[in-house]
Image (cartoon, rainbow, N blue to C red; front, side, top):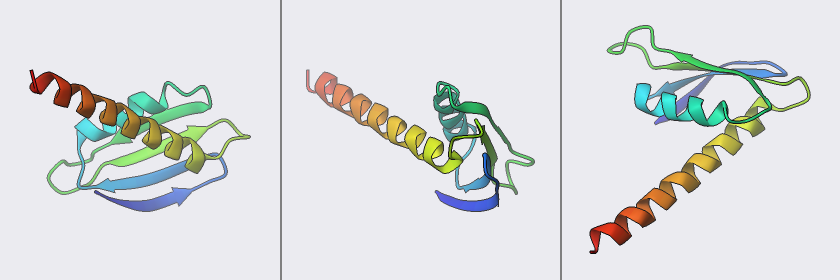
Length: 93
């Protein structure tokens, strides 16, 4: 995965997520929408074979889009670590 900053505002950010598709973008979007500081979290893929997803995040005026995005990423990492531990435990049976 590679990220490319397309546009950054005081309360929004637009990035390209190179090397990912709907699976990752949906997971990130769902996690962001759980955050009360998020106004909008959307992505689009113009053409799945030639264009990477563009992900747009808008937050409340007094919040940092970068911090909100990092918080969501950290929560996803924690969730995936928990899943990994549960899988390891279950597969040992």
